[in-house]
Length: 180
Image (cartoon, rainbow, N blue to C red; front, side, top):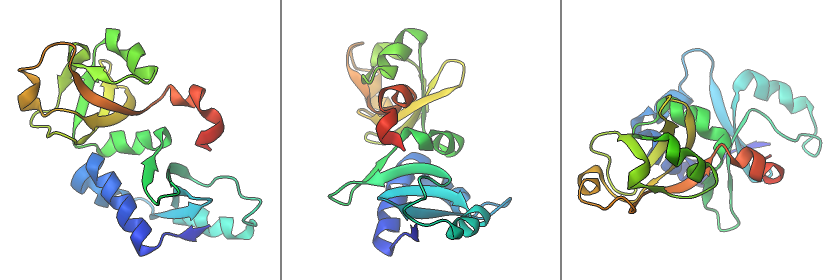
Protein backbone atom coordinates (compact mmCIF):
# COMPACT_ATOMS: atom_id res chain seq x y z
CA UNK A 1 0.00 0.00 0.00
CA UNK A 2 1.33 3.38 -0.97
CA UNK A 3 0.23 7.02 -1.13
CA UNK A 4 -1.21 8.22 -4.41
CA UNK A 5 1.05 10.05 -6.82
CA UNK A 6 0.25 13.63 -7.76
CA UNK A 7 -1.30 12.53 -11.07
CA UNK A 8 -3.40 9.82 -9.40
CA UNK A 9 -4.58 12.27 -6.76
CA UNK A 10 -5.58 14.77 -9.44
CA UNK A 11 -7.58 12.11 -11.32
CA UNK A 12 -9.27 10.92 -8.12
CA UNK A 13 -10.17 14.41 -6.90
CA UNK A 14 -11.48 15.41 -10.34
CA UNK A 15 -13.81 12.41 -10.32
CA UNK A 16 -14.96 12.99 -6.74
CA UNK A 17 -15.52 16.70 -7.42
CA UNK A 18 -18.14 15.77 -10.02
CA UNK A 19 -20.25 14.36 -7.21
CA UNK A 20 -19.42 16.34 -4.08
CA UNK A 21 -18.13 19.63 -5.51
CA UNK A 22 -16.43 21.85 -2.95
CA UNK A 23 -17.43 19.45 -0.18
CA UNK A 24 -14.39 17.41 -1.19
CA UNK A 25 -12.41 19.25 1.47
CA UNK A 26 -14.59 17.62 4.15
CA UNK A 27 -13.30 14.21 3.06
CA UNK A 28 -9.66 15.18 3.40
CA UNK A 29 -9.73 17.63 6.33
CA UNK A 30 -11.99 15.84 8.77
CA UNK A 31 -12.31 17.44 12.22
CA UNK A 32 -12.80 14.15 14.09
CA UNK A 33 -9.87 12.11 12.75
CA UNK A 34 -7.50 12.64 9.81
CA UNK A 35 -8.14 10.35 6.84
CA UNK A 36 -6.11 9.69 3.72
CA UNK A 37 -6.30 7.92 0.38
CA UNK A 38 -4.04 4.93 -0.27
CA UNK A 39 -3.48 2.79 -3.35
CA UNK A 40 -3.28 -1.00 -3.08
CA UNK A 41 -3.51 -3.32 -6.09
CA UNK A 42 -4.88 -0.51 -8.32
CA UNK A 43 -7.69 0.18 -5.83
CA UNK A 44 -8.00 3.43 -3.88
CA UNK A 45 -8.90 3.12 -0.21
CA UNK A 46 -10.11 5.84 2.14
CA UNK A 47 -8.75 5.06 5.58
CA UNK A 48 -8.06 6.80 8.87
CA UNK A 49 -4.42 7.57 9.44
CA UNK A 50 -4.35 5.67 12.74
CA UNK A 51 -5.49 2.43 11.07
CA UNK A 52 -3.18 3.07 8.12
CA UNK A 53 -0.16 3.32 10.45
CA UNK A 54 -1.11 0.03 12.12
CA UNK A 55 -1.45 -1.71 8.75
CA UNK A 56 2.24 -1.14 8.01
CA UNK A 57 2.95 -4.28 10.05
CA UNK A 58 1.05 -6.44 7.53
CA UNK A 59 2.86 -7.65 4.42
CA UNK A 60 1.53 -6.28 1.12
CA UNK A 61 0.74 -9.71 -0.29
CA UNK A 62 -1.22 -10.58 2.88
CA UNK A 63 -3.28 -7.37 2.92
CA UNK A 64 -6.62 -7.75 1.14
CA UNK A 65 -8.41 -4.50 1.95
CA UNK A 66 -8.09 -1.52 4.24
CA UNK A 67 -10.72 1.10 4.99
CA UNK A 68 -13.35 1.91 2.39
CA UNK A 69 -12.67 1.13 -1.26
CA UNK A 70 -13.56 4.22 -3.28
CA UNK A 71 -12.79 2.72 -6.66
CA UNK A 72 -10.03 1.53 -8.91
CA UNK A 73 -7.75 2.73 -11.64
CA UNK A 74 -8.25 1.05 -14.99
CA UNK A 75 -5.41 -0.02 -17.24
CA UNK A 76 -5.76 3.23 -19.17
CA UNK A 77 -5.27 5.14 -15.86
CA UNK A 78 -8.86 6.34 -15.61
CA UNK A 79 -10.60 6.15 -12.25
CA UNK A 80 -13.83 4.21 -11.79
CA UNK A 81 -15.86 4.83 -8.64
CA UNK A 82 -17.30 1.77 -6.88
CA UNK A 83 -20.60 1.55 -5.08
CA UNK A 84 -18.65 1.11 -1.85
CA UNK A 85 -18.02 4.89 -1.89
CA UNK A 86 -21.76 5.60 -1.88
CA UNK A 87 -21.97 6.36 1.86
CA UNK A 88 -19.42 9.16 1.55
CA UNK A 89 -20.81 10.48 -1.73
CA UNK A 90 -24.32 10.61 -0.26
CA UNK A 91 -23.08 12.42 2.82
CA UNK A 92 -21.45 15.24 0.84
CA UNK A 93 -23.39 15.19 -2.46
CA UNK A 94 -24.12 18.50 -4.09
CA UNK A 95 -26.84 17.28 -6.47
CA UNK A 96 -29.41 14.60 -5.70
CA UNK A 97 -32.18 12.74 -7.50
CA UNK A 98 -35.07 10.93 -5.82
CA UNK A 99 -36.78 8.19 -7.76
CA UNK A 100 -40.29 6.85 -7.39
CA UNK A 101 -40.91 3.30 -6.11
CA UNK A 102 -41.77 2.06 -9.62
CA UNK A 103 -38.31 3.20 -10.81
CA UNK A 104 -36.24 1.65 -8.01
CA UNK A 105 -36.11 -1.91 -9.31
CA UNK A 106 -35.16 -1.01 -12.89
CA UNK A 107 -32.36 1.20 -11.51
CA UNK A 108 -31.17 -1.52 -9.12
CA UNK A 109 -30.96 -3.91 -12.08
CA UNK A 110 -28.55 -1.54 -13.82
CA UNK A 111 -30.84 0.51 -16.08
CA UNK A 112 -30.76 4.25 -16.66
CA UNK A 113 -33.41 6.47 -15.06
CA UNK A 114 -36.23 7.76 -17.24
CA UNK A 115 -38.13 10.99 -16.61
CA UNK A 116 -41.24 9.04 -15.57
CA UNK A 117 -39.32 7.54 -12.63
CA UNK A 118 -38.06 10.81 -11.16
CA UNK A 119 -39.81 12.00 -8.02
CA UNK A 120 -37.61 15.04 -7.26
CA UNK A 121 -34.34 16.49 -8.41
CA UNK A 122 -32.10 19.21 -7.00
CA UNK A 123 -32.76 22.56 -8.63
CA UNK A 124 -30.29 23.87 -11.23
CA UNK A 125 -28.58 20.53 -11.79
CA UNK A 126 -26.40 20.92 -14.89
CA UNK A 127 -25.98 18.38 -17.68
CA UNK A 128 -23.30 15.68 -17.19
CA UNK A 129 -23.13 16.31 -13.45
CA UNK A 130 -22.62 13.53 -10.92
CA UNK A 131 -25.71 12.89 -8.79
CA UNK A 132 -26.54 10.56 -5.93
CA UNK A 133 -29.75 8.60 -6.38
CA UNK A 134 -32.14 8.27 -3.45
CA UNK A 135 -35.42 6.43 -3.09
CA UNK A 136 -38.40 8.39 -1.78
CA UNK A 137 -37.52 7.33 1.79
CA UNK A 138 -34.18 9.23 1.53
CA UNK A 139 -32.05 6.08 1.38
CA UNK A 140 -29.11 6.36 -1.06
CA UNK A 141 -29.31 3.53 -3.59
CA UNK A 142 -26.69 4.53 -6.16
CA UNK A 143 -25.13 7.26 -8.24
CA UNK A 144 -24.98 8.33 -11.84
CA UNK A 145 -24.47 11.16 -14.30
CA UNK A 146 -27.23 13.48 -15.49
CA UNK A 147 -28.04 13.26 -19.18
CA UNK A 148 -30.01 16.50 -19.17
CA UNK A 149 -30.15 19.63 -17.05
CA UNK A 150 -33.19 20.43 -14.91
CA UNK A 151 -34.14 23.20 -17.35
CA UNK A 152 -34.32 20.70 -20.24
CA UNK A 153 -36.06 18.13 -18.06
CA UNK A 154 -39.40 19.91 -18.09
CA UNK A 155 -39.69 19.77 -21.90
CA UNK A 156 -38.91 16.06 -22.37
CA UNK A 157 -41.28 13.14 -22.81
CA UNK A 158 -41.63 10.57 -19.97
CA UNK A 159 -39.46 7.93 -21.68
CA UNK A 160 -36.40 10.17 -22.07
CA UNK A 161 -33.28 9.13 -20.15
CA UNK A 162 -32.47 11.67 -17.45
CA UNK A 163 -29.72 9.97 -15.41
CA UNK A 164 -27.11 7.55 -16.73
CA UNK A 165 -26.59 4.62 -14.37
CA UNK A 166 -23.07 4.22 -12.96
CA UNK A 167 -23.42 2.20 -9.77
CA UNK A 168 -26.15 0.96 -7.45
CA UNK A 169 -26.49 -1.10 -4.28
CA UNK A 170 -27.58 -4.08 -6.37
CA UNK A 171 -23.94 -4.44 -7.41
CA UNK A 172 -23.17 -5.88 -3.99
CA UNK A 173 -25.01 -8.98 -5.18
CA UNK A 174 -24.31 -8.88 -8.91
CA UNK A 175 -20.57 -8.14 -8.80
CA UNK A 176 -19.46 -9.18 -5.34
CA UNK A 177 -16.41 -11.03 -6.71
CA UNK A 178 -14.94 -7.94 -8.37
CA UNK A 179 -15.77 -5.26 -5.77
CA UNK A 180 -13.11 -6.20 -3.24
